[in-house]
Length: 598
Ligand code: ADP
Image (cartoon, rainbow, N blue to C red; front, top):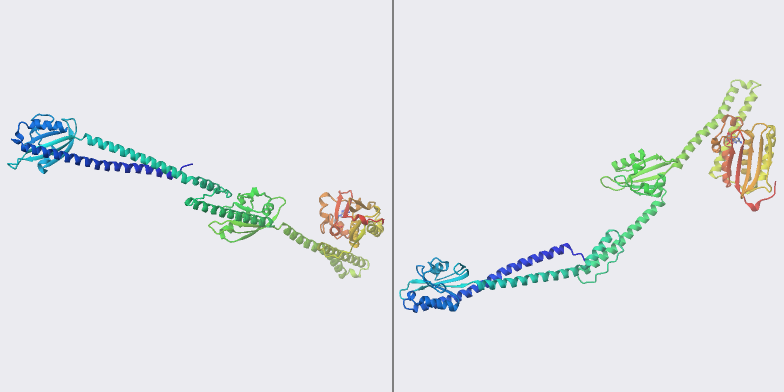
């Protein structure tokens, strides 16, 4: 187990403190012990000096007694102490070690000076005479007869024994203190290690939680102490975190679901313009993938000035901005955009909501073009009618040669106008789905034959070879018979209009892959490839003058296309300029209803 640093520091500190305390204890204890030993030694020495003073006082001549040095030596030998007799003037009378009467004046010795003052003096010092540390005790003695101080008795004993006792006491105390410190530190370490055991588990669990793994299950510390409480708190925290994470995930999923189900594109930007969230619709509208956009700066990827201005204005004015722009991608889209503030801080993020209004704008353009086209188309015959009418009014009415011709022209233009309006209304009804078709099983052979019969004379008048090629049985289509006839007629009329004399027009029917097909093909002027898709648009004519001359409204193919689609069909054109055209109309077939009716 890794030992906590704080605990290591504590144990080192504790050891140092413990040893410091032990040091103080040693000093105090040994000081006290020494003091006691010294006191005992002093008492003993004082008793000896008192005894010697009494003996001297009993001797004849006191200090002057000639046997005194011998006596002093004998008690010195006996007691293993040094006795020195010093006269009041400091001269040594006797000394148990040296035995010499005069060993130099001793009156200035510390203990003697103190004895002069207090009666008794004590000192400790190193004796150069005996070459070892000594304790000295001096006591003055007074001549009982005269009552005055006559000298001093000094007793000296080595302090070696006290010092060595003290040293050994110190040793023992130190050893004991160090052992105690080490044992305590060891015990403390072991105890701490044991009690810190769960810490490793908690720290590993906390690390895992830190990287988002809330599912770990640290074994519960079943103790009745703080660890137990911590364990409980930890588990509670885990449960809470798991719950919150689940809620967050759930919220995230809900948000994701809502965003991805939206048809509007939603982009959330951070204050620095980086994309936080972008839903699928937004990516699709901008023709980008999510990794290409998320966490990138939107305006660096989508370089649209209108969008930049809207975002900057929103951030600056803390309001919303609306704009519309065209994408730079192909196919180009028109996006209507609303930018609003996302959060209320210093430089707020923004939410960009995109609507794809491409179809709407296209419809608007178509509508505007349509209105312009209709006006233009209706104005042309009207202008002719007005011109002829004016000419008549201004005199031609009485011109018998021209008046009939002009009235005929007025009639022709009025017919064209009428047809145009009629066709327009038909087309509008078909497109809006308002036409009330009567659905029947229509045999294409019957319809095509009927139309063929109606136009045969006209075609022959124009020197056209007009023929049919019907499959047998005739293909059946679920459709309105009149509408089906309109489709076929429009195609035949065009074929007649745009085929030169001597040309050939063929109407054919067939069934192929469950489809009922009829074709009107001609060997006429044909249509260039780039015009082929456009001829189905309202009022689109390849050659406007020719179409008008032919009495065309420019709506025939648009009606064909929309009527065919009403019955689930489609129109195809195969043509090339100068080589004729084939218009093919296909419908789904009801096979069981195929009949022989050619
Ligand atoms: P229109 O009344 O002018 O014929 P349509 O919608 O029927 O109007 O046809 C649109 C245009 O398509 C015509 O003006 C003509 O230029 C071209 N077109 C239609 N049918 C044919 C055809 N069979 N051959 C050549 N061009 C054709």
